[in-house]
Amino acid sequence: MLTYLLRRLAGTIPVLLAVSIFVFGFVHALPGDPARLVAGPEASPADIAAIQQDMGLDGPLWSQYLRWAGHMLQGNLGRSTKTHATVAEVIGERFMPTLWLTLVAMAWSTIAGIAIGVISGMRRGKLIDRAGMVLAISGVSFPSFWLGLLLIDLFSVHLGWLPTGGYGTWRQFVLPSFCLGIGVAAVMARFTRSAFIETASEDFVRTARMKGVSEPRVAWKHIFGNALIPVITLTGLQFGFLLGGAIVIEVVFSWPGLGRLLVDSVGFRDYPVIQAEIMLFSLEFVLINLAVDLLYAVANPEIRLR
Picture 1 (cartoon, rainbow, N blue to C red):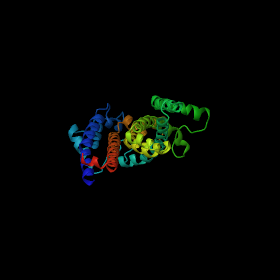
Picture 2 (picture 1 turned 60 degrees about the vertical axis):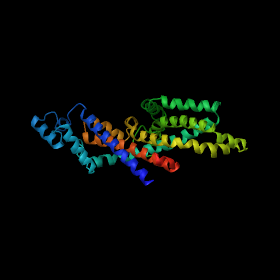
Picture 3 (picture 1 turned 180 degrees about the vertical axis):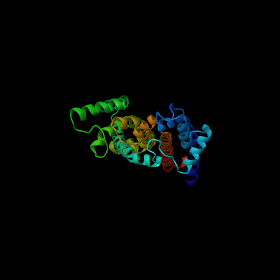
Picture 4 (picture 1 turned 60 degrees about the horizontal axis):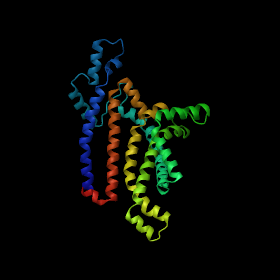
């Protein structure tokens, strides 16, 4: 198991290297000069040049990349050009709101998606199956920003039941977590249904039924456990998607998280924060995929030999 873990960890190195090069090149291709934004509209060329030198933007791109990558490996993410605080502090202040929003959205969407998928798989072709799939298709069809604005108009403006935004109370989690998780719940429902139906057609399930095992026991003991294995992969990938995909939802609901920070940083050309956030999102996906692979290796030891 240790050998498999080390091999998988080694495989993440070229991925992160490629991502870092892409992120650095993409950020520096953005229009605008961050030094000019920091200096202000009345700054002289000499002042701008001094700020560029202080920010490390005066050298060729390859030297800027090597300096940035070297500092990042040492845990030095630089300082925000907007607030002048360290990037670690800026991201740390916004990380927990995004994490809590993601966990709440992931929890309810996973439970609801799996439940709808299992019920639809057990009642394939029936009315409840069709209703569940209509809900699933609707969940992936509605744009999250449009759904968020619609819910704000209904539950906040007209009914006054829930706040329009902010962070702190459970009522402020309801609308953004629903908008963030509705797409995941829909995908989970459709995927779980397909896995349930496919597993139900296996020979060992038919054998259990021929032996007189009750249908609820067949569904729980023989189908559900085996159908859930591929769902583990989807759950991990969807969790990574939620962590990095909350940008629109955080902007719509004025959520003080990483997504809102990224949007604000792009507008101000805050290179250090932009680069650190995108690298953080990439690292999250890599670690989640690694965790899923390890779970697979635990469930199926043959995977460790591949």
